[in-house]
Image 1 (cartoon, rainbow, N blue to C red):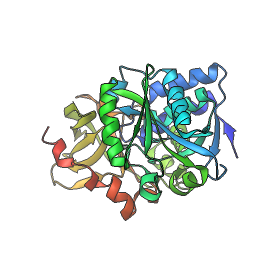
Image 2: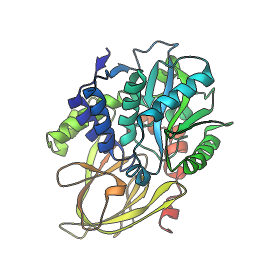
Image 3: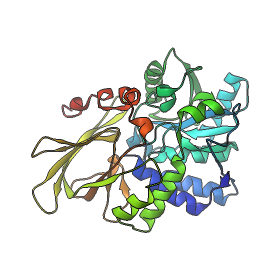
Length: 354
């Protein structure tokens, strides 16, 4: 059954999307502020489940593309999302009825909600990644669906630019290059699909999951309580890797990606963990044994002392953190999915050579 979001809902979703971002997707505080401001200004944000949407509804995927470090300094304008949708409607020759987030992780989970409010579209309770990933072909419609129109619109508040390609990896390359030319951050509208297609290949209920996680984080619930609250979702189990302090940190902006690693030393005991990231945390390695403690697509999230998720661009030496992992839905753990979003899809060892 469809429902309308409140400002309290948005606060919870902001914390939850930060957790599901695995350190990436952009700072959720930005998305929280602009979305709450929209509601305060009278915007109505209607959420509808994937199960509810009509088969022939026209759905578009919305997100912010670019490096999170640039996003922290260059906020998306209100016009960007509306312009991107309008341009896509001109290309398709049909009005779009629904918006679905590119990714539920990080700022992108909230930004799609904000754009839907401004463009007066219905937001779908779901997304295309189930977390955050750094590239636009790392989506479940690519894994399980048939991409009938490989087109995208990029907008930066001053101009909108249409792209087309033979396949999504090629579209990713085109869009990444154009994003750099357009200032490093753009609104992305792509993957037009019908309601039936969205229902068959997108991750369901991820906005609801983010809200549930955020509600628990606001209540400062411990991991056992959070784990129990997620038992009826596809996001389980949750585990603590380490409570420690960041003792070394390296990051670099390269080809539009925030790449690097952080080394975390346990507050008690001798354990030391290295977290490798490319916009998102991708791998956790025990430096004493060399064993991989967790690896993509598992969500690896750092929390501060107040149990708030930390994005990769907010990390600093001396910061005390808890590193936790959360299993992703089965949709992201099949052999087909791992070919697109598993360890082999990332040049993890290249991160260490930066």
